[in-house]
Image 1 (cartoon, one colour):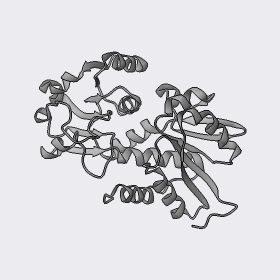
Image 2: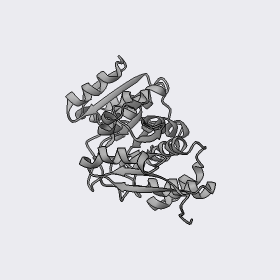
Image 3: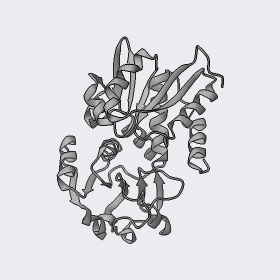
Image 4: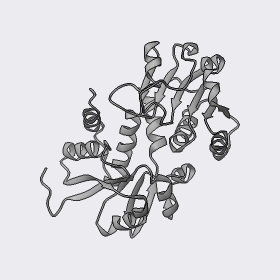
Length: 283
């Protein structure tokens, strides 16, 4: 696609950002719709974030995604935010409107949409979230919306898990330490076990977990996405259990961001094919 004087820009701010699959998805969507727009990765260092946000309108950007490590700080810098962004304390989308910047967070909606599309059996059931960071917060919100009866947060640092649970003010949320993952009774009661930590990115085994106690319909979901199954997903796959990684969440939150920035429905299949090609997987 030729870039000219009428080409409009969207993009993503991150540090690092070269690995991001978002440009492949969004540019595939523009090509599919014949739109004269380009999505660009911007390497923004933490100290540069305030200036980068101010530049959005000055440079005529239609909108930007915000990725690590900027989501929480962007939320603190923006006056106008969606209720969802405020609930999560993080922003992953920013766009200009009438001289002001607006922020939203599409992570929880993207995860909920992916779990619904996968037909994960969640309503009235038990779900376990491993971790207590930003990804875990989005997962808790998504799982509440999908109607789980019991939600257990497990984390290395108990205080962080308690703080996360307190933000959602629900009697249905329990906090356990990581040893609970090796409890056959807890795993045996779960319809979903979701990893929202970075554990499993490196080679080697995952944390001790009672995979053998899982019900046959238990779903294992890793927010990490990669070309190959993660250390969290491999033992579940070996036991014939249902699994998915975060590629579907990335796709669906990206489609929501595309619609915020461009005001048109996202071509989901074109974005999916581009994402999976970028990851070296078949769609």
